Length: 105
Image (cartoon, rainbow, N blue to C red; front, side, top):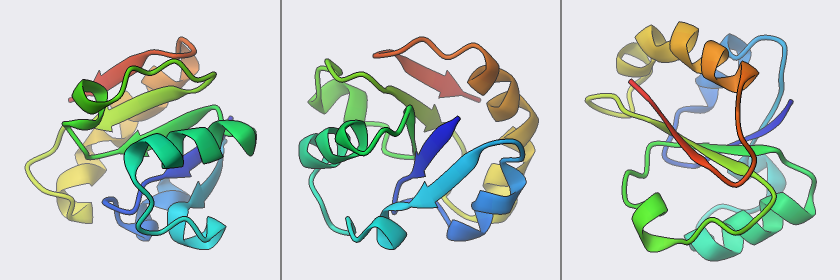
């Protein structure tokens, strides 16, 4: 699955998401983009999901794009806080519904 890692998550998370093609917003040149623009760019580039820590994103946007949003619910955006969510994230990625917000705890 082609995944976009939001700028609010550490890029060192990429290699932990095994079996998926993961790019960062910085790598794509999309750092600092507003949520709506970022979702549109990601969809146009063929990404299937945006991984984020932005808990307000699904309240701010009506997700009407052909990609999912996966919200990682961790105490912080530090890798040590996110690492325990990796097994649940990988499982959630197996069953993502397009245009849906999935919360991984």
